[in-house]
Length: 295
Ligand SMILES: C[S@@+](CC[C@H](N)C(=O)[O-])C[C@H]1O[C@@H](n2cnc3c(N)ncnc32)[C@H](O)[C@@H]1O
Image (tube, rainbow, N blue to C red; front, side, top):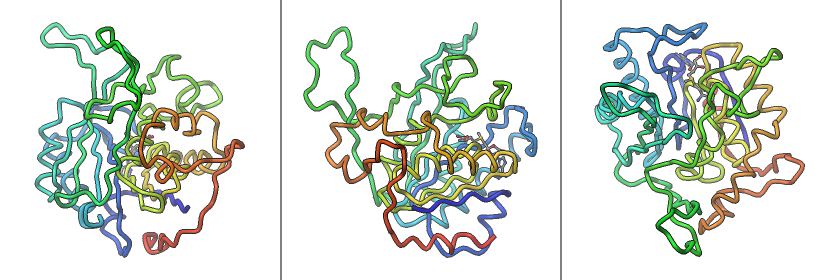
């Protein structure tokens, strides 16, 4: 499998010459909430920000294979903007996924505490080119007597994936500097990307992440034997991504989530087994990845 990480602006990249197609895109941009980014202004006018997102969604749509998918992650309060950006740029809505957080809700005196983030799943055309129906085995609820023999299908509420919080709960998955500081506060969990990639791509497909951050998408894609391409503005981040991909850490090893999906009918086709050494088994799939890399 091939992967490539490019340092630069995703919009510029997407406007450039490129002949390949993306089968799946994970879009996790900065949320415009005045967070500290060394090379990006996270305090844009709201209109300016959403015009930018529209342009990115449009460019990705044009580069996506027929039936290909996009997963656009955002704060729940921006749901209407995300849905509109995707609709206006030609995407067909499939699901509004509620990613329920494991840590405490953000309290408020004037509304319910916020306890989730949204991920909108949309496709190019009505019919997805791939949709693998994953089955999971959630713990029994108090009112349920018997465990289901084959688990249940994953729904649009994802309550089983822990976010990487800033506290010790985050465990050893977040990348850290030697002094223990997080390298990137917005690092997504590998379990999240594993679910998205398993659901909407097959082995050998091309996965794209225009806001690669710490490279979680590429880390999961590599292990699932998908090709991947990431764009990241900040060169410090891209060097972390290169290291993360070349020396796979135990905490990034997704074989630990294989058991979560054990009841999935086509699991062996979509989730390749990996040697226990953590080494990635190589298969030869003709990808044409070179044609993406013109910048
Ligand atoms: C929310 S983070 C993505 C986190 C990522 N999902 C992960 O698991 O690490 C957004 C990233 O987009 C990058 N970024 C901001 N503007 C960009 C642009 N115009 N092109 C490419 N990357 C950009 C930021 O540097 C930041 O690392």
